[in-house]
Image (tube, rainbow, N blue to C red; front, top):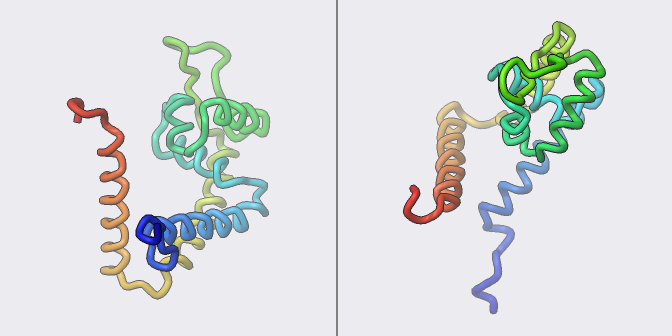
Length: 153
């Protein structure tokens, strides 16, 4: 039985979860004065960097359900951060666009989030940061490869 247990002190997965939770809490703390959550910020950042994403694409990018993203988009639209046309110009997708207010709030949030990332990376050399980035990319890729059904990858 002892061999099947994960030793938390040496588990990369556990440490990643701790890092993720700590990062999320730090981001929440700097976004709270802006009346934003990490999900709000993620949505605005995705819209700024990848205009024209669908509700489903935004949900995947922000790591929430489509239903949660739809609720968030309604709130962002109500608060004047985004606009959506009343009718879809083509198909069923309503393209979401950042408003000037949304862009301004995103600039504030991005500055706050960059400060958290700088704090997180403080004490690491550029080479260590690069190694960490590439190691995390490989981990994500490995897990995604296992998600592909056999014969389709």
